[in-house]
Image (cartoon, rainbow, N blue to C red):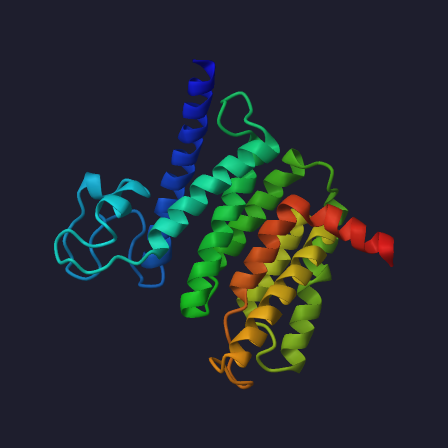
Length: 260
């Protein structure tokens, strides 16, 4: 019986994460379109039909509808269910990594981590679609950094200030010297995240982002889907590096420095 209750609790954690990221999916869709993210009911982007409550259950509704709108039959992008699944998995991962706290769901450290991962998810998808990273995301990360001064005291204010500059300043210099080297949104993302993560983790994040972006670029060039003159959004790869670095950035940096 205890095992069943324990399983239900983990399922509840997954469901909470999926519900939160379902809203983030709405933000990803509406923000670039200039629509309100808090007002207006969810609707089919093809036929405009308002969705019922039964069609808005994270993950389940997509499977029940077989990925199609009940009204017009147009296929629904699998992106939405992937975002919801990611939210559930990340909530569970944050619970495992940072503990569940007095609430039994997520500790304050885990809540901060989950919020940051949610911001990175929105940044990655919106930047991929529009090549824009909105300043509101940078401000939100800075606010998380301010909270981290209390929740993650192992990183001193000096460590965080160095982290804000150690990657962002060289990126800015390269952007000024080489047109199109980095976008302003990318630079601000790394500056704000450096304040949150500290200098060691932000260096690891930049390395992972460059590696992931480089592999993608090489694959696209090899497949002749991009040319040497083409550019692609770098934010998603930075977001990947930042998400990994939040959990393991300091150990990765310490390991690398130990072999130098």
